[in-house]
View 1 (cartoon, rainbow, N blue to C red):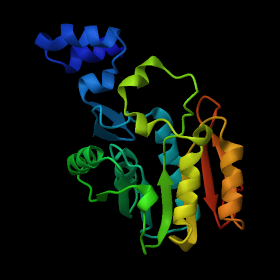
View 2: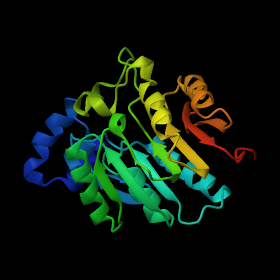
View 3: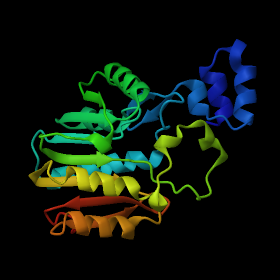
View 4: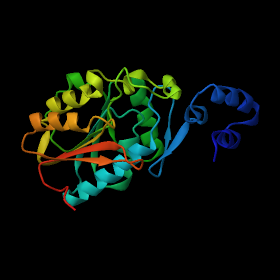
Length: 242
């Protein structure tokens, strides 16, 4: 279904002309409709949150696969930079787990709570800056799709409507991987999994960080459906063999 067809299907006829004008000026159709399908869930979106991407569905899918390989029962999960809550909600709907999810944006957390309620899942959402993260909790899984676009990278015109702090990162895009790996190394259980979405040229740089902060870990870089490097997984068990 084209974007124009989506507008005609989901937006009242009296508002379609204005919506089409905004669409043709590059405004995301997901914001116009107000929601997006994500891994068998309906996620409300607005300009306070990043629009969930198809690539991130694959992050959820691969993460569930590796959790099963680790034979984890009711894993304790931390999501960093939850935004709309799509990742945590999808995980909660598909596996028995206990999830804490944080984001620096209070408005994003408000929307994530609405999305969790609409999808009938219970998640502990909290407004928190990863720079100030201090927790004694231990987690089986830490998952994040952090900002990873370098400030000088060419990007689609459409993303100008999405929150910049959910897209761009210093240090050529790898800043938040460093912050996360440094902050959470004492929050990992004896058996753990870390799951990241990454930029398509960042895999080796994130690998260097993982080797520094978690020197005895195993890692794997995986590709998305378009054959771009897009996911980075870390564990203290060698679960990445076929």
